[in-house]
Image (cartoon, rainbow, N blue to C red):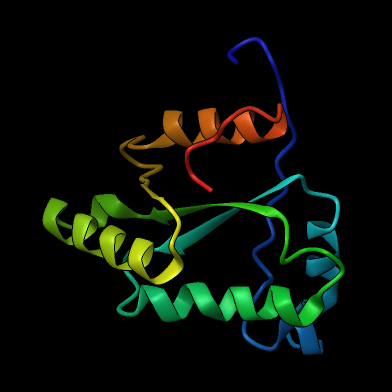
Length: 132
């Protein structure tokens, strides 16, 4: 996949109430309609990552327009700020809550980036991705 390219859109405006127009609301959610895959980054330093995940999922559901049905990769970000055991515990709890595999990710240490890119590319190319 190293010789291929794909476009990534960052949608940071999805906050609680976005589907009802709070924050940047539907303006950001509308961008998600054009995406082939959603990469859902959950801040690993958050005390309740399951709630944080479902706040965004609820906003996607509230918005509708086919966005909630899009393929999704879940990653716990900022894991460099956590102990290894804490990262693994959070990964397991989020996997259990969602029924999906979760990637441990750190942009700072570049942990998990290759996996994230590879799985995203597999989805875009309609290949068998593991993290769905």
